[in-house]
Image (cartoon, rainbow, N blue to C red):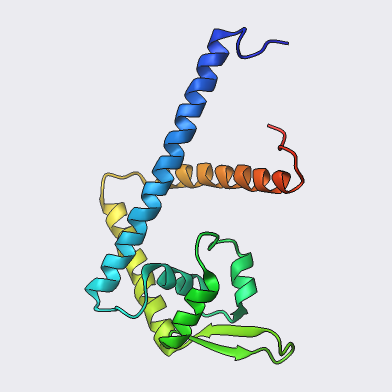
Length: 173
């Protein structure tokens, strides 16, 4: 069996993979921060100051659904944010309606209010404008599909790491 240290080409390939992997992580982090700033700038431009960019995106992802905070968290989109705090702020600012579940009095259900649905529509329109602008640019829309496929592979890889680490092992690579 040949190992990385016995094969210089394999060692170089592993080094390139590491460099590419770290660059991808840095780029994802920068893109995430920049995207949040784009959303914040759009909100600021509309004079909307009672909801932040993270909350606006949570609201957009809720859409016209009715669900529990647990269901929202289980979707996995908000691992880095305090969902309960953000939901409370959106309820306080009348973007969400929160009610006890008819079937389980311990559970609270949330759904967007009229104000929340209006903001969802504005965010959707922002995404439409971005899509049109991308289509009119020299940016190849097929590149987004390729990038998204790569992001999905990274997501599956990281989810595998998390699942295996919970059991105290590493995933097969």
